[in-house]
Structures are given as C-alpha cells and as structure tokens.
Length: 203
Image: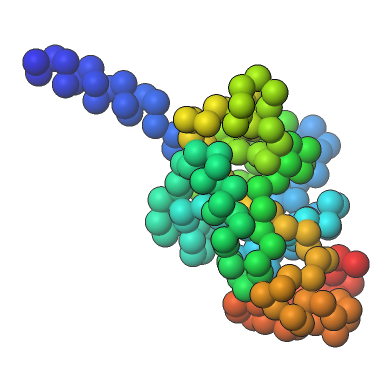
C-alpha cells in the first residue's frame, strides 16, 4: 500500500505542469525581452507587431511577475466563457486567441519554455487553448504547447491553460473612452495608470 502511494505521488509530480527554466540560443534573433512588446502598468501587454493586447498573466495568476494565485486549467467551453465575462483592466472584449494569434508568441529559439519569459512571466510550459475549433471531435479545439511549440487539440473533457487577448485598438463597451481616437485616450487609466510612449502607440 505504501509503495502504491509513493508511485502515485511520483506520477502526479511528474505530470504537473510548472514554469520551466528557459534557455535561448543567440542566433541573431531579437533579444528577450522583445522590443516589439509594450508593457502597460495595468497588467496588459501590447504587441506592436500584431496590434494585439494580451493579458500578461495566465488566467488564475495576478501581480508583479504573475506570482500571486495559481494558473488555472479550464475546459474549452469554460475558457470561452471566462474570456467573455472578463473585465480585466476595465476592458470587456477579451477573448481566446485563435491558433494563428497564439502562435505569434512562440519563441522557437528557446528551449524549456517557448515564450518570452520576461514579458509573460510564470507561464506554464504546457498546453494553452485557442479559440480555433478542431474537426476531429465535436467540441474540440486546437491547443499550443509552450513546452516545445507543438500544436495539438483537446476534447470537451480536456483542460488547458488560458491567456486572454483583445484587439489593442478596439473600442471596448466597458470603457466608453476607448471609442475616442488614440491621441485623446492615450493617458486614460484602464484599471491603473497607463504610461505609454506616444511614438510607440498602436494606431
């Protein structure tokens, strides 16, 4: 009995996803943290290359370095609902990224964790949901594994981690001021103080 408990404990520990040590080769690729990212003081990240705004922390974690709380694994439908109901940083148009959008976060020159670990700290080296349905089974969707950069799919009973995204330049009904031109709302607080360089703002 004691041996069975030890084996079970070992199995659970071996299969738990944890933030992984990251090693990145120097091959002329952009440095980490990437210059294309703008870190906003409200816990969001703007990608100047894609025009997307990401939640810096995975769902379930908050704070500096995303060290408060525990990253949550959700079923796909629950992840979709979490995104729809989120009002993080005052925005109401959060969603799950589609397969192409989530893939833009991959750092293929890095091993152990294939994402910018400075911009997106405490990210699990594991599968994250996308909003893109998979045709294999009803209710299944594509996932992206930030441990090795591989794509896969999960069924309705599977769970994966979640990172929310929105269009950085979109008008958010929760904040009527976001319907104004960027020049007029540059320093409008969204849950906390924004301090963006106007020359770096997405337009």
